Image (cartoon, rainbow over the protein chains, first blue to last red):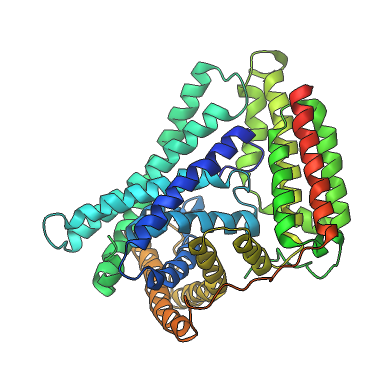
Amino acid sequence: MHIPDGILPAAVCGAGYAATVPIIWYSVRKINQEANPRESIPKAAILTAAFFVVSWIHIPVPPTSVHLVLNGLLGAVLGYYAFPAILIGLFFQAVMFQHGGLTTLGVNAIVMGVPALLAYHIFRLRNIRREAGRITTGIFGFLAGSCAIGLSAGLFLVILVSFIGAGFDVEVERAAIYTLAVAHVPLMFIEGTFTALVTVFLHRVRPRMLDYA
Amino acid sequence: MNFGIDEYIHLGSPFHRWDPRFKLIGLMALIFAFSFVQDLRMLPAMVLVTALVYGISRLPVSFMLTRLRYQSFFLLAVVVLLPFLSGQTVVASIGPLDLRQEGLVAVLLIATRFLCILTVGLVMFGTASFLTTLKAMRALGLPAILTDMALLAFRYLDEIGGYLHRMETAMRLRGFRGRRLSPHGLGVLAWLGGSILVRSYERSEWVYKAMITRGYGHAKPARGEFQACTADVVALGLTLLIVAGFVAGEVLI
């Protein structure tokens, strides 16, 4: 779900970078409102590396395997650090693996990062009435994971179909959006389930890691 | 762990010697100028400039070909599908499929822009160590939270990658194959991911204490880490002239 270089016009790439600035500013402002923001930076940085590594785990979907995006889980665990973490992860991928792109870094960060912030707010709802138990954590983990990947897929498709090439036939455009949207439904289920299982695991083993949300 | 991106930083070409801050500004402007190109007549100039940049950098061609292999199948899908789906002017028919002129033009533009941007990106990051590039970004005024997080994440990527490798090996030795999607298999993989997160979190608590002991947050940022000379400024000026040429060419043609 990474848009490579050369696909999008320069104006869209520039707009992507411009859009990341207020989101980064807002995230940094929220982080600085914490009691000890300096303490969180090493934790968020090392967890950024950990999420990068966890996304390498192959999930078997015969006849092939998929890598999960995990932006919902990132939002649930890192809160407002999720957007900077995703920006850094995408930068590493563009430089080290040539996945995604340098001109499209801003656009890709919006596609992955904004849903991660949404996932953070969804996951926070689990404690709205009382301290969440295992089942509530799992349900909200599932919602955070599946909604984040669903929104990312939606943004990705809209950007791609709107800006790639010229003169798509309306019928072709509609068919492409429906086909690709349907193709992402199983991925939403897998990503949601994986996020639910990891959040329940963290709830049992190290509940402090979920304190952010 | 940098996956070989700074394998050739010892070569000593003009790009290797160029101040990393100026190199970042110049080459980023160049790749944005490339992404601005919409006219087919600009493509030869783009390829020529890219070939010149790559030639001067002295990076081996095999390095570029290896990095190209990493790119996803996404671009291949675009190249294969776009000529049949985009546009109205049919130039040829292959069975029930119509090959369209607008789609072919779009594919040529996308593929050339992609290859040129990727190649210039390799010169940008393949001629200095990744750590130096991150420090140059900090010197250029990127927020401290981003650069601190990037430097630390880069530092611990290798170590955490090692956790995953060891744990996957241990799982295989205990008989886990995970060849098909099942609730049990997904659960095991989720625990694997969760364990890596917990280990990393515990590691981060020690790292934070060690950093505080060494004065993290109190030390003044180092100044004068990069020293630009006249040649660096001239090189940046030349690159920006080329960038202006592309923009002007695109607007005027």
